[in-house]
Structure formats: C-alpha cells, structure tokens
Length: 196
Image 1 (cartoon, helix red, strand yellow):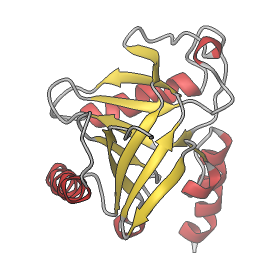
Image 2: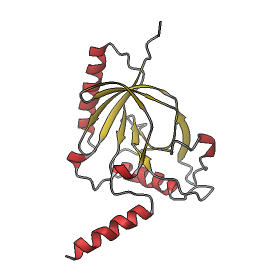
Image 3: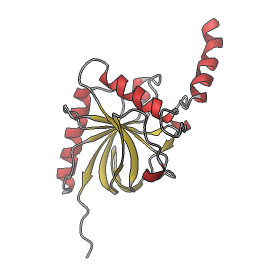
Image 4: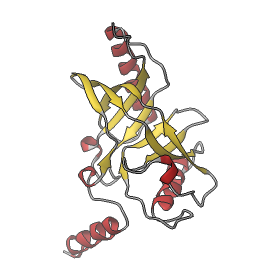
C-alpha cells in the first residue's frame, strides 16, 4: 500500500524537474512523412539544434552522458536557464566516437541556446535533410541496433535509395516504460532525388 501512495509523488517530482511520465509529455523533433511502408518511413527533417556529448565506452558511459545533458537542461548553463526535455534522445554512431544528444525545442535556435557549464557539451545544428527510418521496440541493445540498421539498409537497397550517413538511433521513452512498449528508431540520411 505504501508503494502505491509513493508512486504518484515520484511521478510528480520527476515532472517538476522536466521528466514526464510518458513520451506524450514531451515535444518531439518535427518531421514530415513522405512515404510509409510498414515499420519503414521516409521523412524530411528541418534543421535541428542539438546539445551533444561524447559517450565513453564501457561502464556507465551512456548514463554519465545522459546525466551531463540532463544537468544542462535543468540549469547548468551560463544563463541558468531551464530548457524543456524533448524526444528523441539521439545516439550518433556506435563506435569509439559515439555521441549522445538532446534536441532543443523547435522554437529555440542555435544562437539562443545558452552556453553549457560543462565544457564537454557542444551546441550544434544537424542540417536539414531526408532520412529513412525504421521504428522498433525494446531496451537499448547494441545487437538489436545492428540488426535494425541492417534491416533498414536492406530496405534502402530494395527501394533504390542511396545512404549518405551512418545510422543515428533515437530513443523516445523514459527508462521506467516497459521495454516492449518503448518507441525506438534507427535513421539514415539519404540522397534526395533530383526533381525534373
């Protein structure tokens, strides 16, 4: 019974510092769907302003990176400004140079983003572009990411679409959402066909 009474307080506490209970409570990076086939989509994204940090390999690298980014949006910046959490959290590359990034709210341009207090955080823009996307569920898992990226590349080949970037992984849900209900995506930038 005590747990049942405590849960609403925990959710309320997280919400007050910018963590909503579900993905529906967050602004999502804007995009326009051009094509949809099952779990696959082709989307156009505008320029996205992100704050990113290098992910250390092994240990708690992912957790440390998330905490650094979370501290930034809760006021660890030169303006002491709180910035709403958005989705997805991006993981760019799976190699030794992997980064984690938070997308800034759409109304906030790069020049308006306060300078991070942590020198390991960088503010930059992801250029606008067209992306092929595959949605999948589950927890964060390197093997599953590789499998999904392979499926997406196979679909690109079957559709005659040309890959322009390594995969980017997007994670939309808080960690307390059951893995089978989570929304995850792998995205690959693709070439835009010339219009006649």
